[in-house]
Length: 184
Image (cartoon, rainbow, N blue to C red; front, top):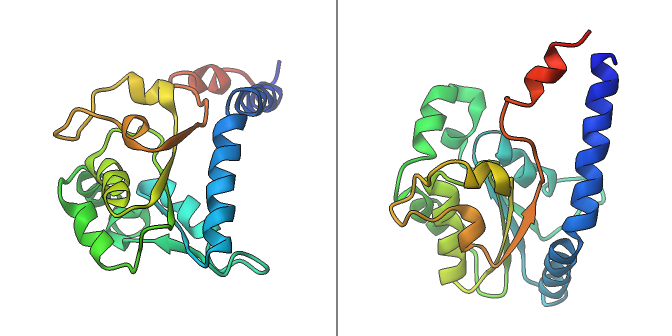
């Protein structure tokens, strides 16, 4: 089988797995967002590294949500200094400083995306949102997260601190993708 066919089959398998296992979590998060928007509250989204793109996707889209707002810290994105961003997302206390810069309030919803779900900043972002009365939604790869220890002082990972968890059902890092790369 060619690499393209293997890749397409894996994407279909993963999407079907999300569809069949994550429906309840997705519907719960959707209810929270709908309730927040009806109450003139906000949907906030945050991620570090590549996961920050989830926050960008809800923001400034033609016909998109006027109350969809990203929480962005350029130092935690990869476009300027990827190596530094990698270290900064592990830094305890950084999420609190970021949260203080945004007008979040109880009744808002916060989505925190992190594939690994083990770095301090995403974990503290979810904890900080909850402490402020936000409902928190984690988008993470639970099996990847379980495979590695937390980098947060509590020893907890993102899927363990959010109110609802949407599991991407992703593969474990690059290990599985090597089988795709070995085919032509």
